Length: 458
Image (cartoon, rainbow, N blue to C red; front, side, top):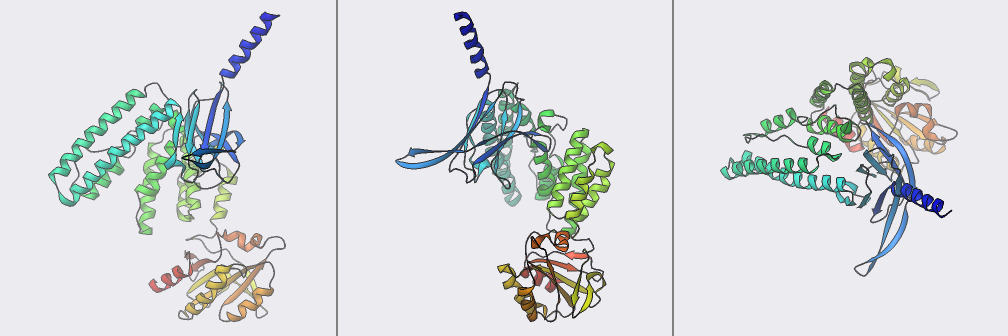
């Protein structure tokens, strides 16, 4: 009997010891009381489990401080890879880390997770954090020396540049050696930045060298990199930040070129699909209709049929029904007992379409201001669309807007579910659209000041 109990105890102990823990401490705690653990696979997140945040009070320096703590248990069969602890539905509300058969513990400020993250347990995460800190410190010195040389052509700056480049190579070699055989080794190798041995004489050459060699040390076939946010983050930086200009027309060309450059480097079918879906989603969020159309025709439509998703395509295109370059979705209304239709209006060379609501304080303030301003632009026909629960307040309000076309849309349950309003996918009210004579959307100013700026410059 004793032998059986001893065997059971040993078996139970082995099960317990085979589990791993992921522990996080928030200081100060987040307002929400939940955290979800995901494993990152390509551009997607695979749900693992969720837990609650527990509050704890500690005394630090004689003062009370409330901490938010959460913990996950992973079995010994849990896959190594990149994981994400998410504590908000939107924004910077997550912490990314690596799991490779060891306990992981970290402390962070939930308002600034990336800047405040500190690992207190996990050899791999500690080493990777240490590497990034050491590497970035020297890289900043290289960038400063390069900038100083472009400005002054100083010999000291040139000498400092070469010394720092050599020191950075030593740091890279050191951490690649330290991480040999570890999961983070893949990321340390891929994080290396290109720095020319010879300093550049001007900013144009420096930026061109950075752009041309941006992916020099990244292996797009690497499974560890694929199953993390690393590749997508790098692609995002290259497409949307490195290749950027204020000129909107030039920006579209630069973006297409940068996307083409990225797609040429991808040989994996699953990475190609992940990148295409990610870029289309990001461009849709940015309301860049022409770029999304180009992505669909240039890349998405060439994917194998089993990799295409009709619902995904429809969803993105529906969001972009009312964006620059599109014909404004049509709608009709009654005006002086006559039927009017946006598509058949013929009283202006340019049209300003504004969606607003009497229940919106910003609208109630901006619409009279806009009305006064548009009196100085008689060549522009204004169409206002009221988003209302009922027409009572709106009817009174538009009495002071006699020179405009005034339409109204309601819905029995929720005013923003009005059919016309949904077609325009408004991000808020008031929302402005500038249309040409054919009712094609040519601009989407953010505020009334932007409307004024647009008509002053066009």
